[in-house]
Each structure stands twice: as structure tokens, then as C-alpha cells.
Amino acid sequence: MNNNYKVYQDFEPVVLNKKKQQQSFASQQSKSNIHIDIKKDNDEITPIIYYPLEKINIIKQAREAANLSQKELSKKISPVIQSDFISKIEAGKYPYDNKTYNKILQVLNIKRK
Image (cartoon, rainbow, N blue to C red; front, side, top):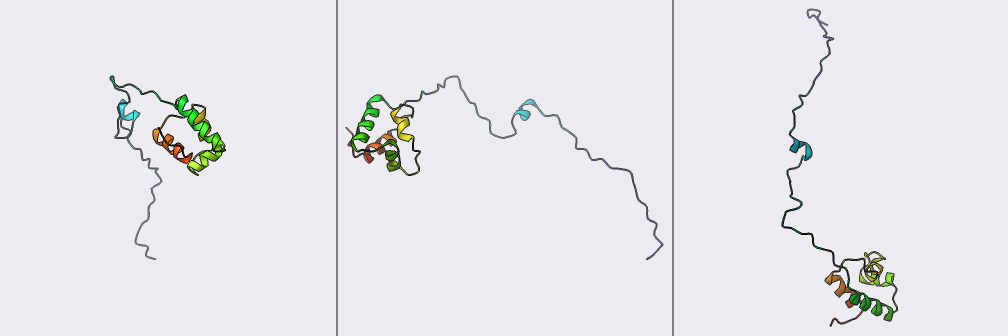
């Protein structure tokens, strides 16, 4: 080992602080680049339309005529559909969808008028 070098150690602590920049109110609220106007003055919310009683009765009568329970009909429509799907429709608590209605009629072998 060569003793020509002197070794010194500095015991003074170093503190690293990041300067905090003051943020505007808008940048504090949202960090994303996407800003959407949720409601405009002229827009109205469209009401949810549920299955009408006439169509509920058609589904219910056809299901009973085919000797199917609500769960069985749900599984016939699609295996991934929830088992209470038909009960929600028959209770009038499921939003009306023409494609779904046509699929139910197709599974029940009902021709649309």
C-alpha cells in the first residue's frame, strides 16, 4: 500500500430537496390531458326505456308454453348470461333492447308480427 496519499472523510450530511413548484388550481384538479364537458346547456339526458307490458306478457306466455323456467330460458339465450336476466325483464326492471327482444323471440320460436 502506498502511503503517499492522505485520506480525508467528510462527515457533513447532504440534504437533497426538490423545489416544489406552485401548481395552478386546474393542474391540481386533474393530471390528465383529457378534459370533457359533462353537461352542455342544450343537452338533455334521455330517459331509460324499459320493456313494455305487452312485450313482457309475450315473453312470459311463450316461456310458460315452452315449459321453461326463467333460469333455463336465460341459459338457452346465452350460457354467459346471468340467471336472473329473464326475471328482471319480466319484472320490468331491465332496459329495453330490440336485439335482445328479437333473440328471446328466436329462442322461443316466436315469429315477430
